[in-house]
Amino acid sequence: MTGAAVAITASFAPSAGAAATGTVNLVAYSTPSAAYTAIAKAFSESPAGKNITVAGSYGASGTQEKNVAAGQAADVVNFSLAPDMDKLVTAGLVSPNWDKVGPDHGNVTDSVVVFIVRPGNPKHIHGWSDLVKPGVQVVTPNPFSSGSARWNLAAAYGAELKLGKTPAQADRYLGQLLKNTVSQPTSASTALAAFTSGTGDVLLDYEDDAIAATNKGEAIQYVIPKQDILIENPIAVTTNAQNPAGAKTFVNYLLSKRGQELWAIEGYRPVLPAAAAAVGVTFPNPAQLFTIKYLGGWTKVVKTLFDPTSGVITTIEGQLGQSTASG
Image 1 (cartoon, rainbow, N blue to C red):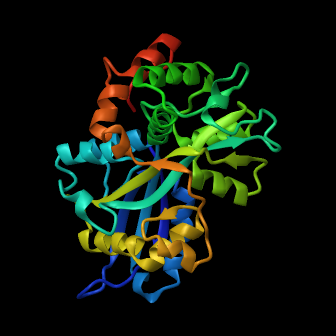
Image 2: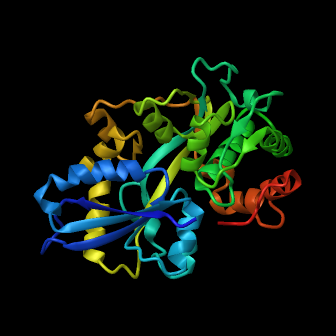
């Protein structure tokens, strides 16, 4: 699925020297499309951005990475997870040092996995064990197109380990979870649309997606499990950017204190922690919050869970008749 192109005019903090001008092509995962539009509106009220236009393209993270690798114009890329960025490093389209930029190693926002449920939480879903009870219908995107889905399943696997289970028991849990899954849309955004349209009892999703849906008045509630993963969303300027000055100005603003405050207002956990407090936003801290490093890092997780021939998830999905085709 090719992300839909959306043109938005934005203003950014001025960089050193002459002010940046022209168009910045942003290629991002699907979830922050509305946030980017809102932040761009705030930017457009600043004189610094009067000569910069951002053209945003949004879609499933893995699909967006493939689009850029295949030649889609991109000055800035913002993916769901680091492996998608690393594929563009291999393709020579992103610097190998992308994860050494900014205050949080190349990440622009954080989040956590939440359980989005129906009003009143009729299935009484509070923890990971509730997701595998008989009759509970789960929605989560397909992990072979969606970065959100990979975060969801990495969170589930790590949560089992935090609960004292062995890796083999965590593998079996993933099998039970996916067996209870009734829909696997291509991205977090399409999964949320399916859920709000009536599919399933619980949706695994980003916290920021749940906050946005709540703010829009959707009939949902969400639960933050005690065992959870810190989602880290990377951003980078591409090596073949047609407007590198504009791209750097844009990214610098997103990583600045004001940019991080705007992300917090939109429901994203800022990589500058003080930014949330500055705008009166509070994010609950799960009791047992872990990062991808707890699972050995993305290289190990991808090999263990998502390897196209031997991954635990690949095997389970194949047995369930789900697509394991990437993108």
